[in-house]
Length: 99
Image (tube, rainbow, N blue to C red; front, side, top):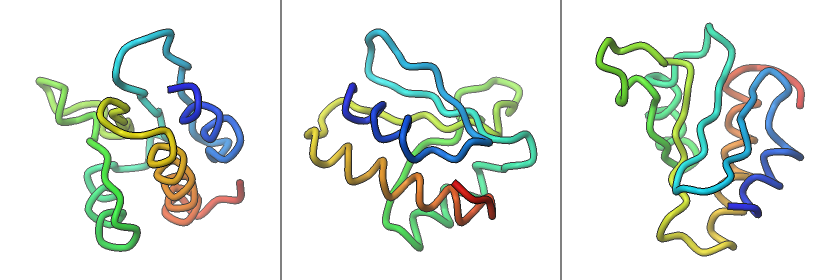
């Protein structure tokens, strides 16, 4: 978890945020309100071979469309670091922002 959060601290676009968890298996990322993660996730899977779960999948009303849930269980530190770096690159491109 710490390794993933370190990458997010360094490379996550400034228009995005997250709260560093003190435990658990997930990291939630909040993106700008205009960012539709139901569009981003399939795009990211196709272009970067990387997946996350849109926050809307966890909402009874389908809200939280601008959130991502990252799972850290079952992955090695090296895998998490590489995936987080790719995710940040993908977010910069998708959101069309500078880091």
